[in-house]
Length: 443
Image 1 (spheres, helix red, strand yellow):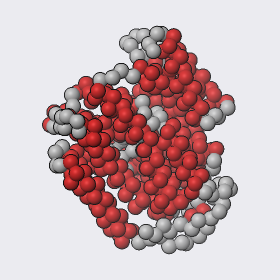
Image 2 (cartoon, helix red, strand yellow; image 1 turned 90 degrees about the vertical axis):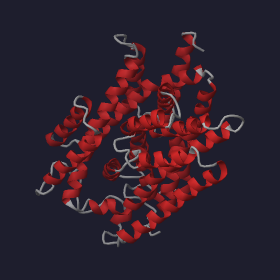
Image 3 (cartoon, helix red, strand yellow; image 1 turned 180 degrees about the horizontal axis):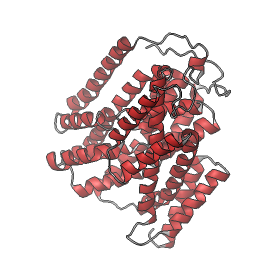
Image 4 (tube, one colour; image 1 turned 120 degrees about the vertical axis):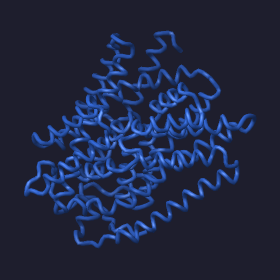
């Protein structure tokens, strides 16, 4: 399919365009260290791709993020797909998005099997307990860095604060916050100078557009038809392969539930989890409520998007429906099918919209709307930081974990002062978790 993006050797940031092999190594590393949910994962990409490697400009990064927050599905994985597409076209987007998911999916597959067999994993729990305060530091650092670049003036600050209050105190669903912020930005964009525009509208940031601002864009509807057809064929092939090999139950139900869930996952995994829990626990009786909560905990401690918790549910659904020696095969098939139908729409939507993101920003109203959404996202990320801090720093009511607070403060100070590679912080957090568990005699 047409990419409509010439490949210059030098990116608009002045950095050389990475080779596909170099990008491949990075996307695999990102998939292995992308802890912390979307805020932590976006923070890693901000640090590694914008600041350290300079593979994408800050404004382009934020525009891509704004676009991805509008889509159902995991925005961090979609952002990786978009950046991969900017660097190396469709194959770059597929590799970036796929490797963002694959390591976490494999880890969660093993953890799902451990959960079904009832084995204790104190060392794994210790490692990921150690990662939690580090993740909070990464999230806080993301809020500071993205906010510093995005919140230009009191209207943007006020919008970020309103988003935080709306989601944290008033419990307004995230899609409504996005729609409200977009409407405010759209109306503000009707004036000559919108307070929500972080950069100029006339030209985009990348070589793919800057080299030839008049380069023709692919026609939208023919491209949309091709991508929709490819999506439907791939969806049918994935479902058909599993059903032809293992039968219809529970695999058709898995495909139906998680395909629907993929298209209503606005606002991240937490937005769709109540729906999935209701259907999988009560309607299908695939697993118990406690097992559902265990799956969420495991997904929180693995790299990759939190929506991978759906893979855990798919594993349990197939495992419990297949007594006997074939349980492991069935569980793997259920997990793989769930992952396939969950993430396939994300690739289709990002690759459909990617060529038009930069051009959309030449429209002052659209650029202002997306700028306002980005400002609101800062407030949403801040809410996630508060949520994580409460869980990690006060694990028992009225009992503060001062050691975890000190670790988080130290990690944040290291990020601000030394800006280390994120994977070193992840390794340090894992070592801290093991050491603390050993001192407590939990290992």
